[in-house]
Image (tube, rainbow, N blue to C red; front, side, top):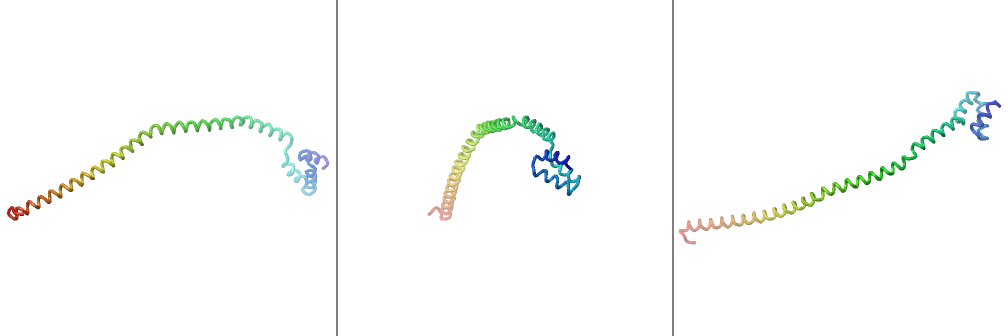
Length: 141
C-alpha cells in the first residue's frame, strides 16, 4: 500500500486525495484502488490533452475573425439585393398606383355616363308616353 499511495497521491496532488485512496484501498481492496485510479489523469494524458487543445485552439483561432467577416459580407450582400429589388419594384408600384387612379377615374366617368344614359332614357320614355297620349286624344293635350 505504501508503494501505490504516493503514485496516486501524485496524480491527485492533494492531501485529502491520499486519504481517499487509502480509505478505498482498505475498504475496497485493489479493485477499489483501480476504480479510483481511473478517475485521475496521468501527466502524460494531461500533456497529450493539452497538446490536443492547443491544436484545436490554433485551428479555431482564425474562425472568429472569419465568422465576423462572413457576417459583414452577408449583411452587405443583403443590402445590395434589397436595393436591387427596390430599384425594380418601385416603378412597378408607381405604375400600379397610376393604373388604380385611372381605373377609379374610369369608374367614376362610367357611373356619370350611366346616369346620363338613364336620364336620357327616362326623358325619351316620358316623351314617348306624351306622344302616345297625344295620339290617343287626337292631338289634344
